[in-house]
Image (cartoon, rainbow, N blue to C red):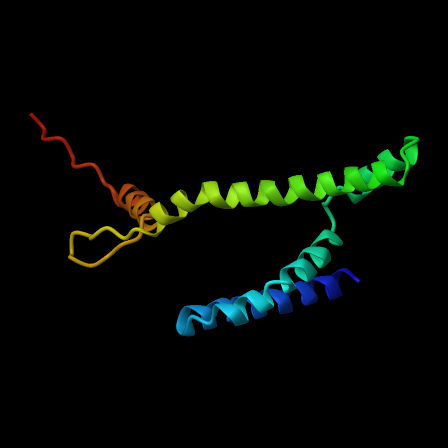
Length: 136
């Protein structure tokens, strides 16, 4: 069952990616907006995968005297906070991603990524051989 959910999510993810590519090429906002409800289907499939507090929520509701309206309120609140946390993480990480994608010029005139710099520093340290001190 889990593998079916993962494949279903992958199919939707790739389809949304293709719609975004088509939007960037052709600018057809109407087709893109018409496809956005697939995000709800993706989210529903995503919520069925492990790690989304279903067991915690079920245990809380089973152990409390909450009625249906309270259960719906708690479920919607959990869903809302889950989505908003993901959006907040994405928005706050955008500056870091843009910094990571900057490509400064290297000494040879080509471009190098920021990720390559620490690797080159470690490589230089690994190859470092101290010069012998002159004998007096």
